[in-house]
Length: 444
Ligand SMILES: Nc1ncnc2c1ncn2[C@@H]1O[C@H](COP(=O)(O)OP(=O)(O)O)[C@@H](O)[C@H]1O
Ligand SMILES: [Mg+2]
Image (cartoon, rainbow, N blue to C red; front, side, top):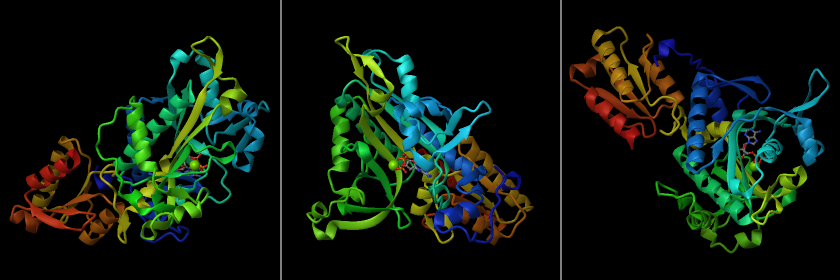
């Protein structure tokens, strides 16, 4: 992409309504535009990152054997009357009446609808296990939408639903989700710590929230500092291997890590004092085994091996896809702007031409652009007739991890400058060596 042809409405001023850094940078970098309280347009740069996050989520879900589908945003109230949640859900549910006077709603989640799909088409235990998921817009009429995409009213969520014959199998599905989430967050450059959460009225021990530590997080968290040393890394995983998945769960959840809802002061105090941490975190996902709550109320049964009907064991597992943009920026920025992790960056590398119109500089930039593109990367070439300072400020703000700077003076010595956004370190290299280095970074 050439910046002269792109749509990147960068703001010079800091918008006064934005209270936290991720919201400020998303507005300033021209990633989102608010259309109503908690409702945003995703401008091209923001949309690009959103898609990258979705891609990672899809890849990791499908690697775990989970099956994508797409359910609508609008739902019939009747389904929710069956589960009893139409009345229970309260003011957060956006209720709509169509022209025939039928009660509809904008889905805040999809347990009822997916259970309806299941009961319509699955009747035998032989079709289990089954995990269906989608990435779809949700609406929750939050009383206080705030912090930009962090707490929106309309927001994008991955929600997956597991169907199993037995509780044991359902817990394996739970573990598969835990593993696939750990992998997905790491690919986004994030550490998201599974913390024991509150099962709500259904209760049970089988729910964890994934928290990204950040001062601006809405949840108070308590943990043993040893949990922050854990990484999933690139270890091989067989998602059908029950013991292996259970091992990962135990590894990542055996140390103390809880949100304020489940915090237990006495247990916490058993940890050596120097390892006790009280901090804040952003909830970027949650996994939840809830058994037969919906299958009982909605009649989702399968015929078991003995021919008798059994209510199916279920769980639901969510990732806050749009919230993740905010969480990543909260975790990765400096005073000049965003610093995208390589896994989600909207463009792989910036090219800054210090003297647009100079034959040598223009030619070198075009060649770099072509070589990076041919290598399968997406460069963003700032080909505008602008001061160098303004070009650098834009690149720093939008946070591309790598930048190649090209000017007539360097070219006389056969070099361009390659700069790392995170460290600020630069090195002079031949254009070919700069391309080779960027390509090798993304290949890793
Ligand atoms: N209002 C919101 N705006 C943006 N993301 C949200 C919002 N509500 C929930 N999410 C994201 O969706 C994920 C799954 O939703 P869920 O666990 O049902 O939400 P909650 O715990 O807020 O009820 C959450 O972990 C969070 O990352
Ligand atoms: Mg939650």
